[in-house]
Image (cartoon, rainbow, N blue to C red; front, side):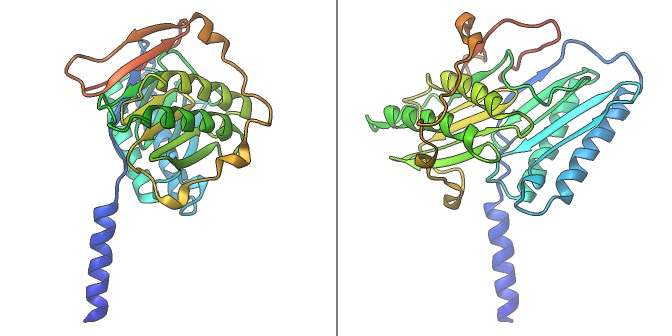
Amino acid sequence: MHRFIVAVVLLWTSRVTADPQVTLLNVGCSQYNASGNSFVATLNETLADLRSSLSSGAAGSSAARFATAQRPRATDPVYALFQCRAYLSSADCLACLSVAEARIRRCGNANGARVIYDGCILRYESSTFFDQTTLPGNTGVCNGSAASDAGFSEAAKALVRDLTSATPRISGFFAAAERDGVFAVAQCVETVNEEGCAQCLKVADANIEGCPPDTDGRAVDAGCFMRYSSKSFFPANQTVDLSRFSSSGERVRSVTEMAHAKRCIVGNASSSLRTTRETAGVDSNSFCLYLVT
Protein backbone atom coordinates (compact mmCIF):
# COMPACT_ATOMS: atom_id res chain seq x y z
CA MET A 1 0.00 0.00 0.00
CA HIS A 2 2.77 2.44 0.91
CA ARG A 3 4.58 1.73 -2.34
CA PHE A 4 1.42 2.49 -4.30
CA ILE A 5 0.98 5.83 -2.53
CA VAL A 6 4.58 6.83 -3.29
CA ALA A 7 4.13 5.94 -6.95
CA VAL A 8 1.00 8.07 -7.20
CA VAL A 9 2.74 11.03 -5.54
CA LEU A 10 5.71 10.77 -7.89
CA LEU A 11 3.46 10.60 -10.94
CA TRP A 12 1.47 13.62 -9.77
CA THR A 13 4.65 15.58 -9.12
CA SER A 14 6.06 14.89 -12.60
CA ARG A 15 2.83 16.09 -14.19
CA VAL A 16 2.81 19.28 -12.14
CA THR A 17 6.44 20.15 -12.88
CA ALA A 18 6.34 19.32 -16.61
CA ASP A 19 6.76 22.52 -18.60
CA PRO A 20 7.68 22.50 -22.30
CA GLN A 21 7.73 26.34 -22.24
CA VAL A 22 5.56 26.89 -25.30
CA THR A 23 5.07 30.65 -25.07
CA LEU A 24 5.14 31.65 -28.74
CA LEU A 25 7.75 34.35 -29.41
CA ASN A 26 8.12 34.49 -33.19
CA VAL A 27 6.88 32.80 -36.32
CA GLY A 28 7.66 33.37 -39.97
CA CYS A 29 6.63 31.78 -43.26
CA SER A 30 8.44 32.24 -46.56
CA GLN A 31 6.63 34.37 -49.10
CA TYR A 32 7.43 31.70 -51.71
CA ASN A 33 5.47 28.47 -52.08
CA ALA A 34 6.89 25.11 -53.11
CA SER A 35 6.03 24.37 -56.73
CA GLY A 36 5.70 20.60 -56.54
CA ASN A 37 2.75 18.60 -55.27
CA SER A 38 4.96 16.28 -53.22
CA PHE A 39 6.25 19.00 -50.91
CA VAL A 40 3.85 18.41 -48.02
CA ALA A 41 4.56 14.67 -48.03
CA THR A 42 8.32 15.31 -48.02
CA LEU A 43 7.94 17.82 -45.20
CA ASN A 44 5.95 15.32 -43.15
CA GLU A 45 8.63 12.68 -43.67
CA THR A 46 11.40 15.08 -42.70
CA LEU A 47 9.63 16.20 -39.53
CA ALA A 48 9.06 12.54 -38.66
CA ASP A 49 12.80 11.98 -39.07
CA LEU A 50 13.46 14.78 -36.58
CA ARG A 51 11.16 13.23 -34.01
CA SER A 52 12.68 9.79 -34.51
CA SER A 53 16.18 11.17 -34.03
CA LEU A 54 15.23 13.00 -30.83
CA SER A 55 13.32 10.03 -29.45
CA SER A 56 16.29 7.71 -29.97
CA GLY A 57 18.71 10.05 -28.20
CA ALA A 58 19.76 9.11 -24.68
CA ALA A 59 17.75 10.96 -22.03
CA GLY A 60 19.57 14.10 -20.95
CA SER A 61 21.96 14.02 -23.90
CA SER A 62 22.36 16.60 -26.64
CA ALA A 63 20.96 14.07 -29.12
CA ALA A 64 17.64 14.17 -27.27
CA ARG A 65 17.43 17.96 -27.62
CA PHE A 66 18.91 18.79 -31.03
CA ALA A 67 18.45 17.23 -34.45
CA THR A 68 18.62 17.95 -38.15
CA ALA A 69 16.98 16.02 -40.98
CA GLN A 70 17.04 16.38 -44.74
CA ARG A 71 15.55 14.96 -47.92
CA PRO A 72 17.87 16.56 -50.49
CA ARG A 73 17.04 14.18 -53.37
CA ALA A 74 13.29 14.56 -53.15
CA THR A 75 11.42 16.31 -55.95
CA ASP A 76 10.83 19.10 -53.44
CA PRO A 77 13.85 18.97 -51.08
CA VAL A 78 13.34 19.75 -47.40
CA TYR A 79 15.95 20.52 -44.74
CA ALA A 80 14.83 20.82 -41.12
CA LEU A 81 16.34 21.68 -37.75
CA PHE A 82 14.95 21.46 -34.23
CA GLN A 83 16.47 22.48 -30.93
CA CYS A 84 15.06 22.76 -27.45
CA ARG A 85 16.65 24.44 -24.47
CA ALA A 86 19.20 22.25 -22.73
CA TYR A 87 17.38 22.48 -19.40
CA LEU A 88 14.17 20.85 -20.70
CA SER A 89 13.49 17.20 -20.01
CA SER A 90 13.31 14.80 -22.95
CA ALA A 91 9.53 14.61 -22.55
CA ASP A 92 9.14 18.39 -22.47
CA CYS A 93 11.41 18.69 -25.49
CA LEU A 94 9.20 16.36 -27.53
CA ALA A 95 6.11 18.19 -26.27
CA CYS A 96 7.57 21.48 -27.51
CA LEU A 97 8.26 19.83 -30.88
CA SER A 98 4.63 18.74 -31.13
CA VAL A 99 3.39 22.28 -30.54
CA ALA A 100 5.95 23.69 -32.99
CA GLU A 101 5.00 21.16 -35.68
CA ALA A 102 1.33 22.06 -35.39
CA ARG A 103 2.09 25.77 -35.68
CA ILE A 104 4.56 25.53 -38.55
CA ARG A 105 2.13 23.48 -40.66
CA ARG A 106 -0.08 26.56 -40.76
CA CYS A 107 2.46 27.98 -43.22
CA GLY A 108 0.91 25.66 -45.82
CA ASN A 109 3.09 25.18 -48.91
CA ALA A 110 5.61 27.86 -47.94
CA ASN A 111 9.04 26.56 -48.95
CA GLY A 112 10.52 27.76 -45.66
CA ALA A 113 9.28 28.51 -42.16
CA ARG A 114 10.49 28.86 -38.60
CA VAL A 115 8.78 29.09 -35.25
CA ILE A 116 10.39 30.02 -31.94
CA TYR A 117 9.06 29.35 -28.45
CA ASP A 118 10.61 29.89 -25.05
CA GLY A 119 11.42 26.19 -25.03
CA CYS A 120 12.42 25.40 -28.62
CA ILE A 121 12.94 26.40 -32.24
CA LEU A 122 11.80 24.53 -35.36
CA ARG A 123 12.80 25.55 -38.87
CA TYR A 124 12.64 24.07 -42.36
CA GLU A 125 13.81 25.29 -45.77
CA SER A 126 14.06 24.03 -49.35
CA SER A 127 17.86 24.40 -49.26
CA THR A 128 20.47 23.81 -46.59
CA PHE A 129 20.77 26.46 -43.87
CA PHE A 130 22.35 24.68 -40.93
CA ASP A 131 25.34 27.04 -40.74
CA GLN A 132 23.24 30.22 -40.70
CA THR A 133 23.31 32.32 -37.54
CA THR A 134 21.78 35.78 -37.69
CA LEU A 135 19.13 36.73 -40.26
CA PRO A 136 16.70 39.59 -40.84
CA GLY A 137 13.92 39.28 -38.29
CA ASN A 138 16.21 38.89 -35.29
CA THR A 139 14.42 40.60 -32.42
CA GLY A 140 14.20 41.37 -28.74
CA VAL A 141 11.00 40.57 -26.85
CA CYS A 142 10.38 42.37 -23.54
CA ASN A 143 7.55 41.71 -21.08
CA GLY A 144 6.83 45.39 -20.32
CA SER A 145 6.82 44.94 -16.53
CA ALA A 146 9.55 46.98 -14.82
CA ALA A 147 11.50 45.59 -11.86
CA SER A 148 11.19 47.43 -8.55
CA ASP A 149 14.85 46.88 -7.69
CA ALA A 150 16.88 49.86 -8.92
CA GLY A 151 19.92 47.66 -9.51
CA PHE A 152 18.14 45.07 -11.61
CA SER A 153 18.81 46.71 -14.98
CA GLU A 154 22.56 46.80 -14.61
CA ALA A 155 22.66 43.30 -13.11
CA ALA A 156 20.68 41.91 -16.06
CA LYS A 157 22.80 43.69 -18.66
CA ALA A 158 26.04 42.56 -17.01
CA LEU A 159 24.96 38.92 -16.86
CA VAL A 160 23.80 38.97 -20.49
CA ARG A 161 27.14 40.47 -21.57
CA ASP A 162 29.02 37.73 -19.74
CA LEU A 163 26.86 35.03 -21.33
CA THR A 164 27.45 36.60 -24.74
CA SER A 165 31.19 36.28 -24.24
CA ALA A 166 31.22 32.87 -22.56
CA THR A 167 28.67 30.76 -24.45
CA PRO A 168 30.58 30.42 -27.76
CA ARG A 169 33.51 29.00 -25.77
CA ILE A 170 31.40 26.36 -24.02
CA SER A 171 30.94 22.90 -25.50
CA GLY A 172 27.42 22.56 -26.86
CA PHE A 173 26.98 26.34 -27.09
CA PHE A 174 24.68 26.53 -24.06
CA ALA A 175 25.08 28.35 -20.76
CA ALA A 176 22.77 29.15 -17.85
CA ALA A 177 23.69 31.42 -14.96
CA GLU A 178 22.23 33.19 -11.93
CA ARG A 179 23.67 36.30 -10.32
CA ASP A 180 22.30 39.14 -8.19
CA GLY A 181 18.73 37.95 -8.57
CA VAL A 182 18.92 37.59 -12.35
CA PHE A 183 18.50 34.26 -14.15
CA ALA A 184 19.69 34.00 -17.75
CA VAL A 185 20.52 31.56 -20.55
CA ALA A 186 22.17 31.76 -23.95
CA GLN A 187 22.18 29.08 -26.63
CA CYS A 188 23.32 28.64 -30.23
CA VAL A 189 22.32 25.87 -32.62
CA GLU A 190 24.92 23.12 -32.66
CA THR A 191 25.57 23.22 -36.41
CA VAL A 192 27.33 26.61 -36.32
CA ASN A 193 30.96 27.20 -35.32
CA GLU A 194 32.30 29.27 -32.45
CA GLU A 195 32.63 32.40 -34.57
CA GLY A 196 29.08 32.09 -35.87
CA CYS A 197 27.73 31.59 -32.37
CA ALA A 198 29.62 34.66 -31.17
CA GLN A 199 28.24 36.78 -34.00
CA CYS A 200 24.68 35.66 -33.36
CA LEU A 201 24.88 36.32 -29.62
CA LYS A 202 26.42 39.73 -30.23
CA VAL A 203 23.28 40.67 -32.17
CA ALA A 204 21.10 39.07 -29.47
CA ASP A 205 22.87 41.12 -26.80
CA ALA A 206 22.13 44.31 -28.74
CA ASN A 207 18.48 43.33 -29.19
CA ILE A 208 17.88 42.39 -25.56
CA GLU A 209 19.73 45.42 -24.18
CA GLY A 210 16.62 47.55 -24.54
CA CYS A 211 14.52 45.28 -22.30
CA PRO A 212 15.81 46.16 -18.78
CA PRO A 213 14.36 47.33 -16.45
CA ASP A 214 11.69 44.88 -17.61
CA THR A 215 11.74 41.76 -15.46
CA ASP A 216 11.88 39.41 -18.45
CA GLY A 217 13.53 39.75 -21.83
CA ARG A 218 14.33 37.47 -24.75
CA ALA A 219 16.31 37.73 -27.96
CA VAL A 220 15.56 35.38 -30.84
CA ASP A 221 17.35 34.72 -34.12
CA ALA A 222 17.79 31.93 -36.65
CA GLY A 223 20.87 30.56 -34.91
CA CYS A 224 20.65 31.57 -31.25
CA PHE A 225 18.42 32.38 -28.29
CA MET A 226 18.90 34.45 -25.16
CA ARG A 227 16.70 35.10 -22.15
CA TYR A 228 16.96 36.75 -18.75
CA SER A 229 14.36 36.92 -15.98
CA SER A 230 13.88 37.94 -12.37
CA LYS A 231 12.42 34.47 -11.79
CA SER A 232 14.11 31.12 -12.23
CA PHE A 233 13.01 29.23 -15.35
CA PHE A 234 15.62 26.45 -15.32
CA PRO A 235 16.91 23.96 -12.71
CA ALA A 236 19.60 25.26 -10.36
CA ASN A 237 21.96 22.43 -11.35
CA GLN A 238 22.13 23.78 -14.92
CA THR A 239 24.22 26.85 -14.07
CA VAL A 240 27.88 27.21 -15.04
CA ASP A 241 30.72 29.29 -13.62
CA LEU A 242 31.12 32.03 -16.22
CA SER A 243 34.42 33.20 -14.73
CA ARG A 244 36.03 30.14 -16.32
CA PHE A 245 35.26 31.68 -19.70
CA SER A 246 36.34 35.25 -19.03
CA SER A 247 37.00 37.83 -21.72
CA SER A 248 40.75 37.15 -21.46
CA GLY A 249 40.34 34.87 -24.47
CA GLU A 250 39.74 35.97 -28.05
CA ARG A 251 37.35 38.89 -28.18
CA VAL A 252 33.95 38.26 -29.70
CA ARG A 253 33.93 39.66 -33.22
CA SER A 254 31.58 42.57 -33.81
CA VAL A 255 28.77 42.09 -36.31
CA THR A 256 29.29 44.27 -39.37
CA GLU A 257 25.63 44.08 -40.31
CA MET A 258 24.76 46.13 -37.24
CA ALA A 259 26.45 49.19 -38.74
CA HIS A 260 23.61 49.58 -41.22
CA ALA A 261 20.84 48.19 -39.04
CA LYS A 262 17.45 49.82 -38.86
CA ARG A 263 15.33 49.69 -35.74
CA CYS A 264 11.67 49.04 -36.11
CA ILE A 265 8.76 47.99 -33.93
CA VAL A 266 6.60 44.94 -34.60
CA GLY A 267 3.59 43.58 -32.78
CA ASN A 268 0.46 45.44 -31.76
CA ALA A 269 -0.59 47.83 -29.06
CA SER A 270 -2.55 45.24 -27.10
CA SER A 271 0.43 42.92 -26.74
CA SER A 272 1.99 42.43 -23.31
CA LEU A 273 5.33 41.84 -25.01
CA ARG A 274 7.29 44.81 -26.28
CA THR A 275 9.36 43.96 -29.37
CA THR A 276 12.24 45.59 -31.21
CA ARG A 277 13.98 44.27 -34.29
CA GLU A 278 17.41 44.90 -35.77
CA THR A 279 17.25 44.44 -39.55
CA ALA A 280 20.35 44.53 -41.71
CA GLY A 281 18.98 44.34 -45.24
CA VAL A 282 16.85 41.60 -46.70
CA ASP A 283 17.96 39.08 -49.26
CA SER A 284 15.51 38.01 -51.93
CA ASN A 285 15.08 34.55 -50.44
CA SER A 286 14.79 35.58 -46.80
CA PHE A 287 11.78 36.32 -44.69
CA CYS A 288 11.21 38.04 -41.37
CA LEU A 289 9.77 36.72 -38.15
CA TYR A 290 6.77 38.49 -36.65
CA LEU A 291 5.51 38.55 -33.10
CA VAL A 292 2.20 36.71 -32.78
CA THR A 293 -0.18 37.82 -30.05
